[in-house]
Length: 258
Image 1 (cartoon, rainbow, N blue to C red):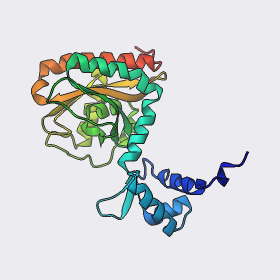
Image 2 (cartoon, rainbow, N blue to C red):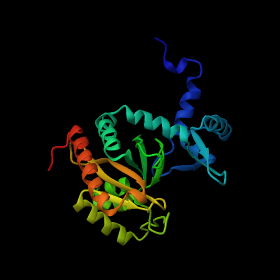
Image 3 (cartoon, one colour):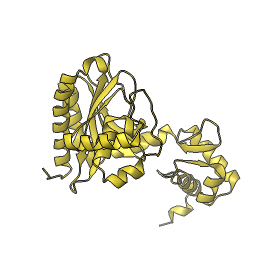
């Protein structure tokens, strides 16, 4: 059988993949010269391939046009791949149940660098509610899912994941690192987290961590919606439901802890 290297177009595909694989959590953005160096290509070829990838939404340019990063199509493809794995299968039924029980939108999210990425979501029944999209990323320290995951990481790992300067997306965002890590300790004891207008004014979410067979946190699930429906009393009830859902997902992932 002929090697795949001999098929027409194989070299271009390999080169394009090398460019996509050059982006990672430590360097989510790279310039043209840097990408050419990492992929082992000349600048002309690199630019031509990047232009084609940009046209398909697999990469996008920064606001200044000096650097590139993975585009929305790449994130969507990654989310589709994740939905086919065990985590997706283990959580889908729980998201459907939470959405039905609460009427709110339920999501499954993972940590990607310092952000949370929505892998799956189930819309609630209310006309006014959260409308997340699969593949959307938000700063982890402003989301209930991000806080739930970070609280269950080893302290040093959480410290290394977060940027030195925490972005204040709203007046209620926790941008002080000392205060934020104190919040994580409280979340770990409670077993659930809240984000009350920390990501966006008027939006509230309740999240809980999902653990795998080793007891390591791998994701979080949440329900979220407008502040008007998320009273203090209801948040307590929602927390019980979300914690129960996350516990059942964890069991399906092989977790057998307390």
